[in-house]
Structure formats: C-alpha cells, structure tokens
Length: 83
Image (tube, rainbow, N blue to C red; front, side):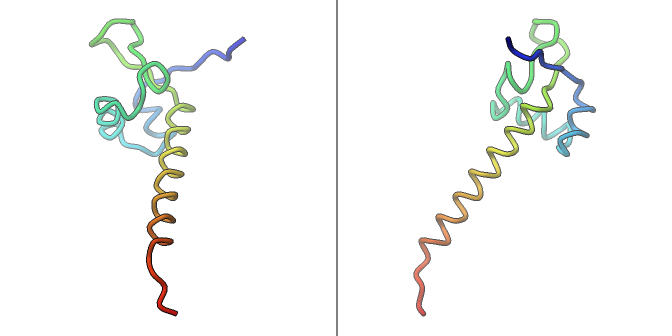
C-alpha cells in the first residue's frame, strides 16, 4: 500500500523547499520537475490549480545536488597536477 501524497499550494511548497514560486513555476514548465510526482493539476484539468509535493521537490533537490557535485569532482580530477 502506498502512502497518500499531500498536495500543497505553491506558497507552502516554496517556503518549505526554499525555492521561489517563480522558480518552481519555471521548473514545472521546463519539465525539470516531473508531472505526477512533483506537481499535479488538482482538478485533473489543464489550467486548473496546481498541487505541489514537498517530498518530491526535496528529492529532486537532492538528486540535482548529487549530479552537480559529481560533475564538479569529475572536472577537478581531470585537471593535471604539476606537483
């Protein structure tokens, strides 16, 4: 049995995740935050109000951080050492 999600408004999601509402909307429109897990159309109809999943957004933040950190380490390891 899956745990039901709690869908919140953008102001609550923004505050809980430390991301502005504008950035959340931008991430939603670009497809970086996946529909159905990070956000939904609450009414089931396009153009209706959006519901946001704080745990899904926070997991996305973790995955983005790990990806960025991995790239940073890879770039640092690629630099020649002259010692």
